[in-house]
Length: 312
Length: 92
Image 1 (cartoon, rainbow over the protein chains, first blue to last red):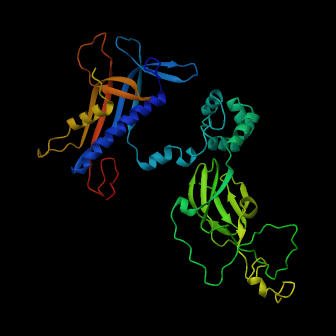
Image 2: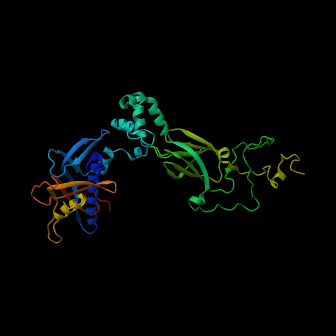
Image 3: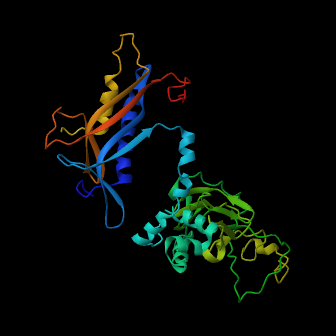
């Protein structure tokens, strides 16, 4: 980009807008010490420019230099707008969270074709596709349907890494209360050992599950495109909704409760897909034992299901 | 043309219509039509617009051409809750 090559129209408008913003900021600073300040209500300029097209078909403007005749006159006007006017006339910020066309692997020419039909990111592409169908978008843009579908697949939210860390690594948390004296509970893996005989149980409720070494664990789910227009994914553990403690486009984090009523963590992604994670199978979490658990050397003495009825 | 960013020129133009403190005068609205020599330069990868009134009244072969600019300025009360000239009220 140089003055000789000219500038893209949007770059030119951005540059003027930036200058006007700085003017308003400078004038607003005077309001600190004065009862009355001034603001630029409107600014217009008739610019003598040369309009040219570059090799990609972009319109570029070049301000006329000294002694150059035959320049066009471009009239640009700026006015102040209120917040509701901005909201009515601009794209919602949520839409801008969506991956760009470059991020889903479309080349310059394909991007330009889609931008001509008002599509600048995946969210806008999906919206257009839902109203006109893949064939319609393909006809308007000249991009094959397969190519569009392939690109859209790239833009879908995905979780590809799961990691569990103590909460203390992220932020200090109060330590859990110590267990009552004399009731230290060993932890038992929920994973089924094929060599072991199944132990009959009287309780049918799901067993509480807790992290292996210590409670207060934070689950980090990493991936991409995790922030949709409706916000971040929603995480539930059984029927319990888990609030996100941190989220971004490529990462969400939830704190696992100390006592968990389910081993299945459900993540509702922004595109509606639900990913189910088995905390025991996928993360090797362990279960808190119930009173009378068979692997407890002390509690097993009173277990009526022991071979000797618990009395040796 | 001395390089002055557009915002510096606009701020100076607005300052020019503000009556001095203690004069008892108050400008409520002003409109200015001014010739501007405009130049765009790339500074640290960003396009920056420089604009200033022409340094000379004479047309020459080495000075930039002038572009007509129009600036409308309004006074804005800074008292919280009172609507300003743009119809917006400032939060207290």
